[in-house]
Length: 194
Image (cartoon, rainbow, N blue to C red; front, top):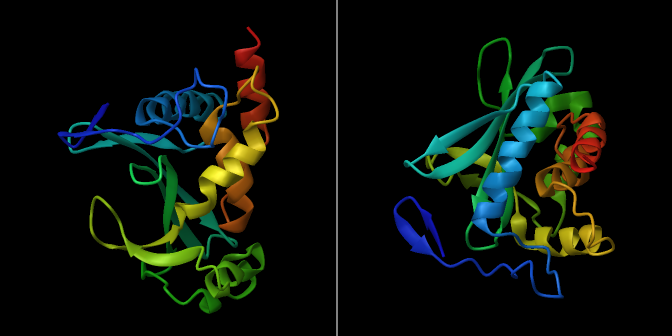
């Protein structure tokens, strides 16, 4: 049982003591892995920060300039109680005037990183949604398939489980223009081997 924003919630994630792993995680595991991820980010001089909303809801934030500093990306990783997985929210700003860009086709060559392709997919994996904390529009990489992806990714090696956030971001980052160094995986592997 977890408490998020004062409400007691029961996560549907499978207990780690069970033999089957379904790719979901509990909120406490998300927080633990987020803190480990921030420690890695600090060691790698990356710009991720860990923030807190509503006295107890932890989430990750990163700002990144892309495409020769033409665009500013704002990424936020929030835990979804409904899906029991992290969810990526992001916005894109014109760096010259701060205007939020909603038409991904306006991004020109930056769309080669897959944002426009994701938006046009029939699966609606990329949608515009209100941010769960601020109720302002963001793009959301929909979490409906995350548990299955993570089950497939992590079930092959139950003895050594990588940091869930590192593994998940390594999988989704290329699809949303997020630059994440391979040093995250190497640093986590080295740290967990101690």
